[in-house]
Amino acid sequence: MGRSIQINTCSLDSFEGLHQAIQGSHVEVTQLGRGRFRGALSHVGIGDFSLSIGSFSVGVRTQRIATDDKLVIGMLLDASERVTHWSFDMLPADVLVMPPSTEHDGSFHGAAAYAAIRLDLAEVTSLFAGEPRLSDPATWYVKNRYRANSPTGLAAKRRLQQIASRLAQQQAGMPDEVADFWKRSIIDAMAATIVDALPAENRGPVPSAMRLVRNVEHYLDEAGSRPVHISEICAQFAVSRRSLHRAFDDMLGLGPVTFLRRKRLCAIHSALRESNPATTTIGEIAMQHGFIELGRFSHYYRSLFGEYPSETLYMSKHGSLAVEHRGSLATG
Image: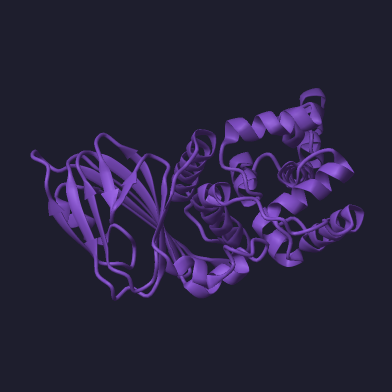
């Protein structure tokens, strides 16, 4: 059964449009900057989880009342002038934690853009099961600002915007497991700055690297062709990303993210070999397996297999039959 992904995108011509700046959460907004207000707002909903991305052209004051019982994690994507939330000064790519049932106020002194996710606090235990501090609900009851370093912050900003843009083009529903992968990808991009800002944990020796890698491979085999996010692996085996990376690096000489990507590329290769070029869209298959940037996907694919996805599809058993059929008609 395909899960419905709710996607709403609109242009704003007044500050009132920002009252739903975060889907499901009412925000009081006052325009502070002079000039005509222009903006845009997008909401992506997957079940009770939502991602909101907004932008506006003039300074505003925002206030969220304390009745919202959901956890909100926000990221400043861009700002032309100073931005503060509570007493925290924010820079682009910084991440803000807004605990449930907590009043919030923000001041944007000029044009800005933001992203925010809203989720049930009960979900953090399973979503961050491999990270003891993040899987503890108590961590999320504290107002906090996490300062981004340049590489992590820039990558997270870009990733969020790419996912939102690609999902906005998704017309049909998608299988639950694929929707879950994209939900985890959004949360992962938003939490990357937080994970990066936390000090490394000394959790003792990694479980036998060989056993852990084999268990992960068995789990992936059981998952079949659906995309599996690294946070799902960490949750399944109660292991941190750092520990998982050490195990894969010891055993395979590459990190778990690279390994998971190559597993997904192999699944796509097999799918393309079985597909009919007349009815198959490479972009749709890539999306179902966790890829949104077709240019980068094509690069990864060609680097691994020595051919482009279109070549694999064209030479599939259906594609070969089509070529042979056309050839027989031409010579018949």
